[in-house]
Image 1 (cartoon, rainbow, N blue to C red):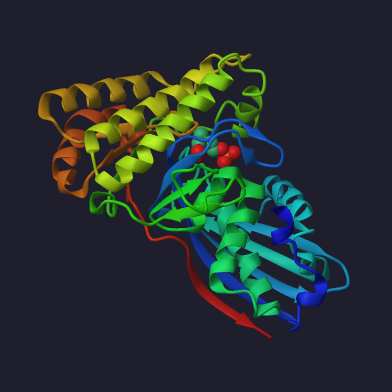
Image 2 (tube, helix red, strand yellow):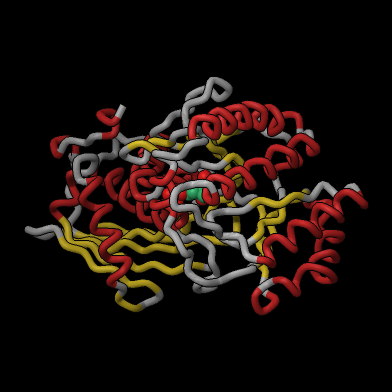
Length: 361
Ligand code: PMV
């Protein structure tokens, strides 16, 4: 499979001396979670996510021909050495797939639309934006690459940078990991799930910012702890079952089943963290308080509202657009007090990355 994405220098018919490409690429929130992997970023179980609309990374990649490969990185206009080592590792890992990289000097300029240190991971949006820029340049060098192939390769390349980033290359609902229920699904790249019920087209995700601090443990470490986890195989079976059922729910729009599966996934992810060795807990007291209140409110009102969590303390509230007013009332009257500085972000299912501008010489 990997060979399908390996380009050869001879395929680069046209030569570019310089240029720049700017993409915006969104974050995504997993409904069935990816937690545990084999090298290199092959998921231990399939996952599926909503691509978001407002939480995104904007990345400009400027390049010029050079006898040596080199690059620099600016985050919000400032040089960033922490990010640089991540990008260097990424460039090294993808060289074989895009040999043109060796002949250019790159300048990466990137920023996020969501607040700094909001506890929202920017790796999915950041790595997908960079992968899209690189694949777009490669498409200029080899115009035989179709738009569909460019996107699929961007998903493949983004996955190498950060697993969940491969799902950010497409809008709507995206699956990653081979499953029988989704034709063309793959462990190597994400695929858009196109036939979804209309209720999911503009599903809402309001992110309650419980803790904006840096995570106590990185997701790479968390994935690694699944290697010797006593419950790993049961967890992977559970995720496969949840995936199978959720793919059906995405077609039927059965929200009661949606809520059950999505919350089961969120709690299972955090249960894996707590029961790994060493165990760790990313929940904060306010995370638990919000979850309890949401569930109580749902029991009393019948709102189609559920929670999910990423690898952090923040709570994502998922619900249909028609219920937005009632959910916002609940947030303002009962939940905002449990958010750090009363902060939350309103987002929804989005359409995916966009080219913001490009020019080549
Ligand atoms: O892509 P990574 O390595 O940052 O891992 C993401 C893990 C979760 O966000 C917890 C789950 C997921 O599927 O996005």
